[in-house]
Image 1 (spheres, rainbow, N blue to C red):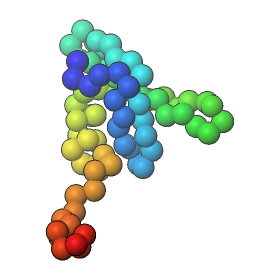
Image 2: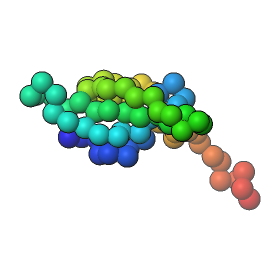
Image 3: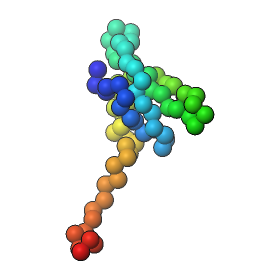
Image 4: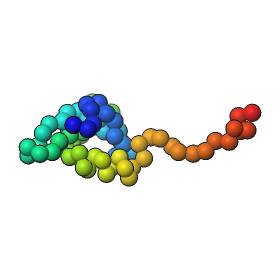
Length: 74
């Protein structure tokens, strides 16, 4: 298990929370991701560890990398 419960993953600008994980097919971790809508209902999806790794690698996860010059705050 690589990703703990309650980890937030950004997919298509939506926050998906890892709701549970289990061993699938005896060889790989399968994660259930949940996204809560404004009316309180949930969308869910199941992904394996490789798919989540590729999403995290290719999709920005909230960190905006940019350089700030020191003199900008002086």
